[in-house]
Amino acid sequence: MRGVFGLVLAALVLAGAARAEQPWQTLPPTPTLPGAEHSGLAEVNGIKLWYAEFGQGEPVILLHGGFANSNYWGRQVPVLAAYFRVIVIDSRGHGRSGHDNRPLSYDLMASDVLALMDSLKIQKAAIVGWSDGAIIGLDIAIHNPDRLTRLFAFGANSDPSGTKEDPGNPIFPEMVKRSQAEYQEMSPTPGDYKSFASQLNHMWSTQPKFTAAQLHAIKLPVWIVDGDRDEVIRRENTEFMARTIPNAGLLIQPEVSHFSFLQKPQQFNDDLLNFLGNDRPPARP
Image (tube, rainbow, N blue to C red; front, side, top):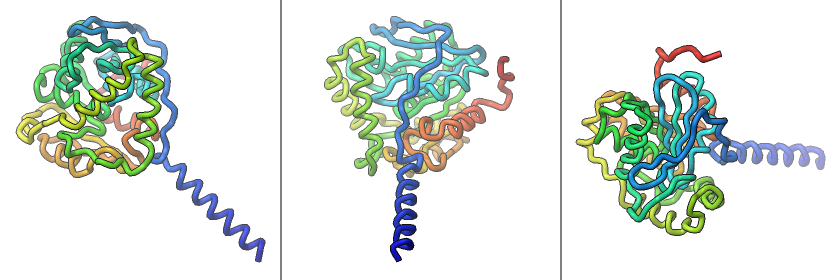
């Protein structure tokens, strides 16, 4: 009997371990970016905005989420740079970028992206955005659609009611905790984290405020994308945006949360390459 009990107990332990290792229950380490062909601080909108460029071809801009930085795209950049000119940006106040005394807002961060595009002489680009980065992409699609070729919007919400009050698991709070150490290591103002976090939380509680009419006016190719286990975004808001933007695609990635690109990077990258076009050039040798 003790042998049978031992086998049952071992099976239960293994089952519990398997559940604990589901992708949506993990927060893999922050990746590192590969060596850039060019990187630096661009003086735009009164601040120094950090960016880096990789590869050649049609431009694709990657925009990270709140509290994060461009290193989070470390699993995507090498794949995309084989086909495209990839630009990553640390949003104002995030990562290696500076900030000024203006409150954080999606409109302001969108204007930073456009100013950097002007500085790099990029008239139009595709945007791949995660969370706040996806909202910035939607802001540009609404107010400056002539600057975009297409938009892959992962984990966005159209207004504050589109987010959950309780994440339901520890992954998002764990990421926020991690971000404090990254901020203090990377930021030109490492002592300002508390003020930065306060501004970001205030922005989330009041923005964005995209109307159905604004979303319906978007005509460029858009995919609204999310993980099936997203702990932050309400599924009904994701579906509302996909339903309201004309001809938008709706993609729900399986077995991942708000951090899909870390949890199942190959799945995320395959979807990206599919979205960015079947007419992409062959990979460089």
